Image (cartoon, rainbow, N blue to C red; front, top):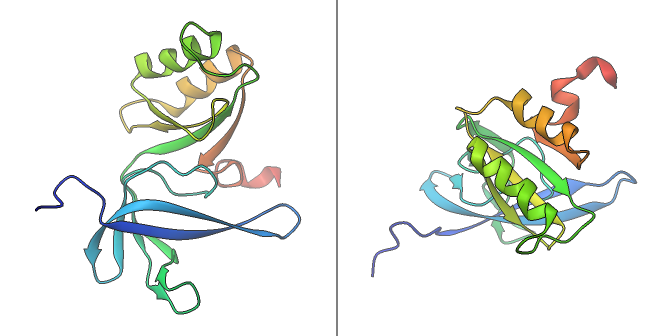
Length: 155
């Protein structure tokens, strides 16, 4: 049976928390050979990577799985993450707001009923999405590019 269209593995990302703790996230990916993987799901915790990016992820001897070390090729997608006060459900205001992002050309994936990653494709202006999120008073964050990458002088 062919694996065409299905991810062939997972890539481990270590995400350093605010207090210095390290969290782990694994993203589905296609093995492209030579330790390169194309990401096949949206990151909920990792920064500076998006759906479709190609990353370098050699096998980590301690983890025994491909582990992110660098971005090899950006695909042009960007990622923001949204934290809804109201759970997303049919007919909810949260669902209406997500559908507004879809109407703009974005895609989304939920980790929970309140926490969503949103992929912004290259044809959609990041500023337009940012304005939409601010106008609707949503709680959100830049993930790729990260806030510090967009505004290095604000640190």
